[in-house]
Length: 325
Image 1 (cartoon, rainbow, N blue to C red):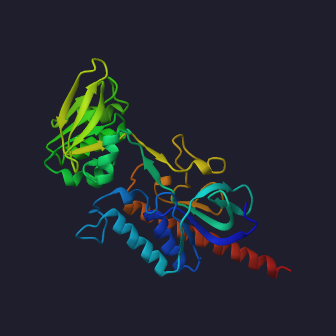
Image 2 (cartoon, one colour):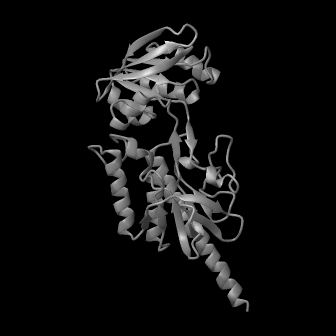
Image 3 (tube, helix red, strand yellow):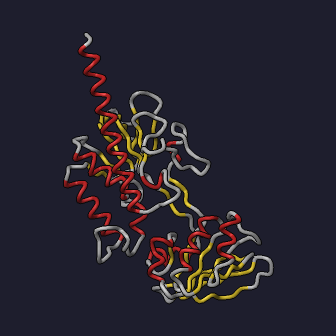
């Protein structure tokens, strides 16, 4: 352990749209923010090939380019952007303590958590290959569905999110094939009814993905198998969507912050406040509904403003206390 303890007014954990937006606002408020990028600098957007639905980019932009611009804007206002990730926290006392890479200890007046969430994937080698190539694998229909207009796609999943995304895709694509592992949906009755009543959605029950097929650059189809009969067949498709859930990156906070059953941080409604004073949350670490770059950025702004007001209130209390002596 390092003997040198650093003191920071505002620590931001995570570097996606939420983290960088929080940094921009915190820096402009003279909070001298320190931002640790985490294990995936730029967050989930760095795996997105094209972003066309973020305001201000009429021609679109790649996810990595967009995150570089966010970083440059944060650094313009003197945000201290650092490599490394937070591996341990202690929010039990008045001072918020965090450890970077299990070694460096930092004491923070405020902490903004922007650690995001990670999409769950099947883990197939072919799936990961085309995900990294940006050639047809996605975990966000709202983000990427537009690129498959009038094409045929496959979506894996059986919950409400999968049904919502299938419905969304059905309005853009020629055909949507839903691959459902069991013989029933996990989704609510109303969501099941919607997909079942949509003419261009085909549902394959008791079916699992064997391999994502492609030409080495883009997806051309999906090979599936019936887990009752082991019969295999191929489905022509240019897009393969995975909707089996997300895992919020919040494990290190579970001993101190209130989390829901999935692990999302529970914030005070209408704010970015957590159950610990001086600790705020933004982005997908708390958002299991929208999960968009623009909404994440908005909550990053909220978190910085809430942190600024928290510090201002503390300063006022300190001044009043001093005047009494």
